[in-house]
Each structure stands twice: as C-alpha cells, then as structure tokens.
Image 1 (tube, one colour):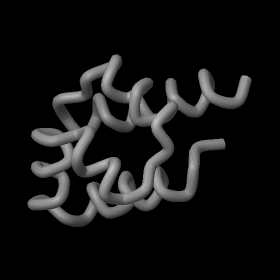
Image 2 (cartoon, helix red, strand yellow; image 1 turned 60 degrees about the vertical axis):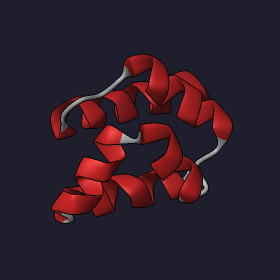
Image 3 (cartoon, one colour; image 1 turned 90 degrees about the vertical axis):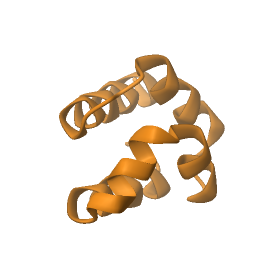
Image 4 (tube, rainbow, N blue to C red; image 1 turned 120 degrees about the horizontal axis):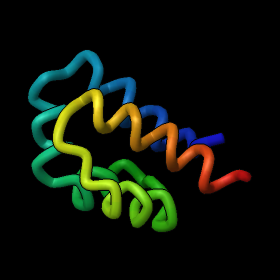
Length: 68
C-alpha cells in the first residue's frame, strides 16, 4: 500500500490542473511538501513521470516495489 500522503497527492493531481503541473514539473519539491516518505519519492523520481498517465503507472510501480 502506498502512503496516505502519496495517495492524497495523486487524488489532488486528478482534479487540480495547476497542482498537476507543479507536481510533474517539480516532483521532488511537491512530494516533499506533501509529506511523501523519502523511499517513495526516490522510486517515483527514478520513474520520471511526465504525464498524469505515467504518474498513475509510476504509483502502481511504487506500490508494488514498496510493499512486496
């Protein structure tokens, strides 16, 4: 399971276009500001999502790598 912080980030990115842009343009800073754990942040950075679809896929990868 992903952290609650990471779930909140993704849910907000779905509905808030400006936040989504900020997230995709400044992934580390945005995730840190939301309290996403460092290990999840590093995994997402390695995947370097550039679109909402890529972000969703990256979140699934983080979910699988973090807890399996």
